[in-house]
Length: 497
Ligand SMILES: Nc1ncnc2c1ncn2[C@@H]1O[C@H](COP(=O)(O)OP(=O)(O)OP(=O)(O)O)[C@@H](O)[C@H]1O
Ligand SMILES: [Mg+2]
Image (cartoon, rainbow, N blue to C red; front, side, top):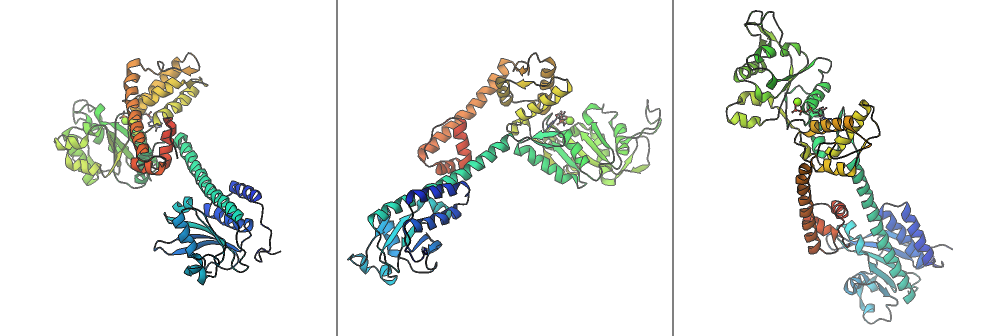
């Protein structure tokens, strides 16, 4: 028996439901699922065709999927669709001929349709940009009238399709959430740098892009944020990698010696200049010179440095002979260099020469939960170094690490963890061993708690404004629905969907 001849036996509804649910397991594409649902509808109801119809932006409608006899362009009853809109529930038209009202409806007459089942699939609306979607079945050639039992089956099938659509959306959402959670704990590494925060990733990407060029890089950021480590990466990823990398801390050299250190000196050029000495610029030739704490450079050295950048030549102290140098400059500062420029403590022209590629290195405060990731990384590193493996942070310690605001940034985390590994008495490292006294953590605890309280209040407010609709609540909060769900779960807040 062929299906299109419609002499088939209707398929058992339960079997169909089971088949549809089973097909869910390996069907993550909603449209493919709906197509399957459509062909099952047509089997269960033993009709001639079933259609998935969607409204178009201009108000007309199109057949999205079609199962059974005929083609997508065959006429169907638009009257039935209108009636479903009016009645807001699944509709059965079992015999239009005998119905005074229906038999005069134009589309029923022109399409010569005698019996129709139709419902709205509102859960599918989202897929179609908020437009109406209909499930529609009829039998035109044999004009077998649907019975009230068919309507019951049809209602169940419509419901099943709606539920399956919703489920598959949930599954997709859960998948995205799992990915998001994985991303949260996934430790990413570049060279010997560990991170997962977007802010650090952004900074690292900038460094990587800039490295290949020869432009001066200015790294700004608080102490211990990784400026020197990033300067080394600039060098390592540049065509100068095989040549020297020299790091000079401008703040650590006495002002009267800085020019001779940077540019070299001739024998006898000043007391103590017992021999000719090359400066860092000459030593680093072909490579990269990292000038840390550049803001500490005294005014005469700034003028000299500017000339070097302009001419590509240095003149040793006590000499007049220019020497060509080819050095890439990476500088760093943890002070506000722009303020220094505004106050004439730092030359504006030099600042612009150095600040060709500015890179802001984020502090730990700006790096989401990187503090814990780094602490764990150092724990492993020092555990291996001091042969003290198997150590871990207690839950309390982990919380304290996340809450503390780390004024010394990565270096401070590193130092405290190192000390804790050396002094560890048992496998679990306590908050005291990390060097937290009660005041330090309690002050920042209240900051953390304050943040949570604000989050909770705003979320509760949004949920109140949009009861039972997470998507709208998320819109009010200007976050996406998944983030809202994560927050609700994190704070253990109850919600209805
Ligand atoms: N993302 C990271 N992963 C692992 N270690 C890091 C990371 N960032 C920095 N470190 C380590 O932290 C320490 C401080 O980094 P670095 O010396 O580069 O910072 P800095 O900004 O130059 O500090 P300062 O301003 O004090 O000179 C170094 O030992 C470095 O290896
Ligand atoms: Mg440094």
